[in-house]
Length: 293
Image 1 (cartoon, rainbow, N blue to C red):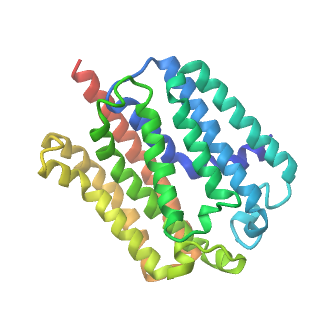
Image 2: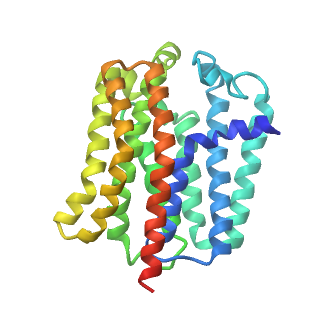
């Protein structure tokens, strides 16, 4: 059973979980049991698209030093069982959402459809330069956040605030996707996957990703300057800043030498410090909600 859990690649979508959780508590907190069921459905949906992606990338992943160890590429899970596993998770996800909160069902269908188009022929959007990281920004940043917001009945009323909240998340995931593509450059080049990085080069990819991270980092201050975010909330970002320093240092290493090893080191550091930052941010939002009651 462990190989199926490994195929889900949970460690690769921890940020997606944060986006969903962030959206679910930002404006209003839904009943715990409903939130828990829909959250589990979201986890199943996300795991299914990662498994499906491995099915279509199983030959290309053999050329990747890290991904060649994954259960599908290494043959520990057969292609047939991979498809069945992904399909069962999709069905289970849709049933849970239908039972818990049917209003977010269209968002789940869009989410699954977008990521299916990303991985599968004839669309195969992961091999379309620019579209590859834009899809990642929408599918990993915007949609999970919107799905979390959809648990409340204030989705339409807060649409402008939702867009403002989603923008930095989209930028972070666009940049993160490009950095991942930098690490996959050699394998993608060899197998003909035309990502943005393959088309324009690793150095350009790292620079573009850096601008996206920078824009996301400064967005709260821009929102405050425009009167869209109370200045008192900037205190949170001053607390989080020290956690970004090790990540910035790893990014500098990737900028200097965009190798797969440096990308892996940056991703590990981001996960380690990112989990702490996410915990602090979610706790701050919840405490703010409680204090305002």
